[in-house]
Length: 424
Image 1 (cartoon, rainbow, N blue to C red):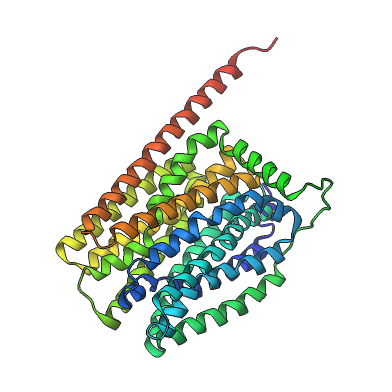
Image 2: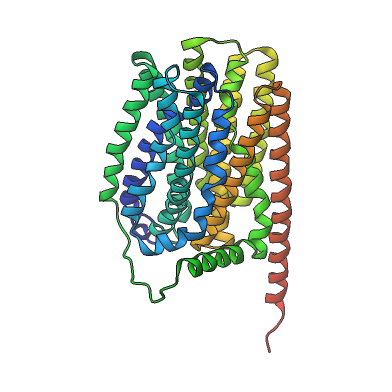
């Protein structure tokens, strides 16, 4: 393999990933405190409702996202779809700016509507993100590019909490959100300079109804392919397992008895440590999969997740903030590692079609949405419910992967036997 081929497009990829990282850094700083801020002002279930709207209704765009990627350049797609990050924070702006002067129903209605819009754009954004990585890489550097991209996006979890911590020190909550939104819009303009794809004129002109039917059939055909079907359980349960970070971490810290500004600072610190774990997970996932095979590394990531949950639970029992930090670091590691490895497995073992990425996004969204529903009903219950949820979803994801892996091994042995049969 030539070195030039391995690093082909590397700098373009780094530029693109840097924009994504900075965008996610600023907007995640606002996301991280939504749950606590809403609760402080009496909107106890608004965060969960917001995530449900964002993740369960957005996947409807999966029926047309393939057509969008085929018809519109990546530059335009990312400039428009990245507004999902700002629109999602509308609820934060409203609660921070007029929690006492605006009616509760008005705040909740606007937040729900903005979350639905953000969910639609978010689906396009994240499917296009994976499609762009696939567009930029080749067979020799696939693990490198996916690993780098996920480590960059994971790094946003470190930067977001540094940004959030310092902005929280010097500005009130409303100014905090205004600064985040303004900087994010400036960063979005940088998408004008990414390496773009060439759009070929479509030979087929289908009506909207026919296009939706066609895309639905393509998506259905992709995810019902036997290998993908066996892997669906891993994706859905991993989504259920990993989606709780934004809602779970604040609850953990609150249960240690911190109050007011100290509570916000401790939440930022916990997210910071979680983010460091995510960066390590993203950086190491690709490299480890090159040496030890991605399936084996994924088993290791599940083990790390179990240990992280266990440490966090001990932290609550012992009222130890340090134990919770260690636990969250391991949960962060497994979160990023599992997501990165799942995509590597899909692209290497199953399919590189856009509908395969759409299926990944669909499963993740279902997982995020269902976990948000869980949190809406159980956010005021004892933490035993939350830890049980984490143990169960992690176990189900692991069992699903064991079933998939067994099929892959069996398929490999069958292929070897077929190769040994002499051809006439």
